[in-house]
Image 1: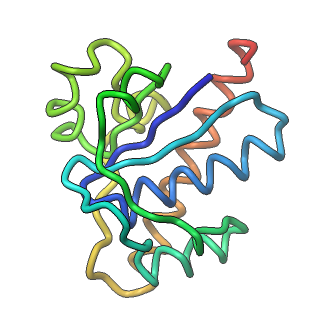
Image 2: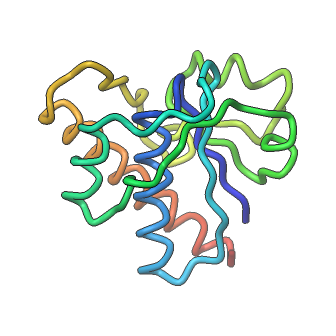
Length: 147
């Protein structure tokens, strides 16, 4: 299964989600390929320092992340596209159709994942914890589907 995580700039939420999901997938022997991208991302930027730190505290490595914008190829190659907010989902829906969900929607929880950009490390930690909780539910759903 190919999973694409999408946020705005691909330097905070979607790279943290991808790194955390990769960790969960390895731990649970899930057969997934994970990508991340941003709707308004500039190509070639590193993950924000606090995203790297918050992910590392949870056992995920973002140190080599390089941002990339969303492309038709990424959308086409994805089985599931998990956006951080309803607005991201709305922007992706015309191109991605029925395979786009918000992360929280797909996980069966309410709300969106707020952008920690510009916040202190505690804001990023809270974002990472929210992502991790939703991703555990996503991983259970994937495991139950046999992927």
